[in-house]
Image (cartoon, rainbow, N blue to C red):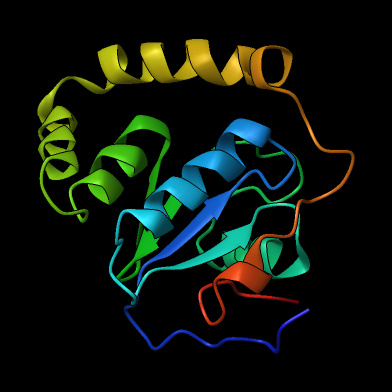
Length: 141
């Protein structure tokens, strides 16, 4: 396991479900499609992820969604995904405009996928470790 990475204040952190195969694939997609290097990742199930959730005032015991932490603010579910996608280069950046749609609509779609993600895409028995392939991008315990 890599050494603990400390993001600088204000750098964005993406918290994701480390047991979800779809979520892990999405993290790899972001890294391969040049998400800016100031973005860091932590699995929600990790001690570090739980600490970050608690510091943001979010429940840390049974949360299974995507969270974006940046500049003292946090976004969940579809809003987090849209803001993250807006940080990618074109054409993926265009997905960022979806954040202007009503939360009820975007989260309806997000929740439909989220509720079925383990059944459709599978689940790891424990947090899947992908940090070795991307040193310095993952916050470890």
